[in-house]
Length: 156
Image (cartoon, rainbow, N blue to C red; front, side, top):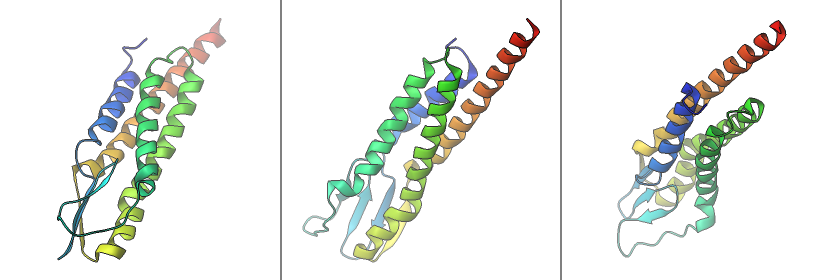
């Protein structure tokens, strides 16, 4: 049954995962540098200034976001296997927590050591927090469905 409320929450997680690709997570400002951190790249907005960050620096953020987006979309269609849905959602919640820690704690410290400036978090930095809330709510409603099915099976 795709029309369940948890399917709506999972769909919103997919939408939020896609939105994270289109706006910067954070901006780093100094006198010589103006960097924007996206899920897929670290962009230097000042021509001529060089900061060495490889693609592998951003790769975990990109892979975790893609995994959360794809797994949440896939989980919507697993409505007949609620136990697997619960496991996948919990895995997505774990990946989402890694993204939150990376965006708010690891990447700013890593970049600020080289830029020596200020950090300003963008709109997309808070999307993993909202996504985590939606994953929690979806998990809660799936557990509620599972309890209902088990109680009906007990009555038979």
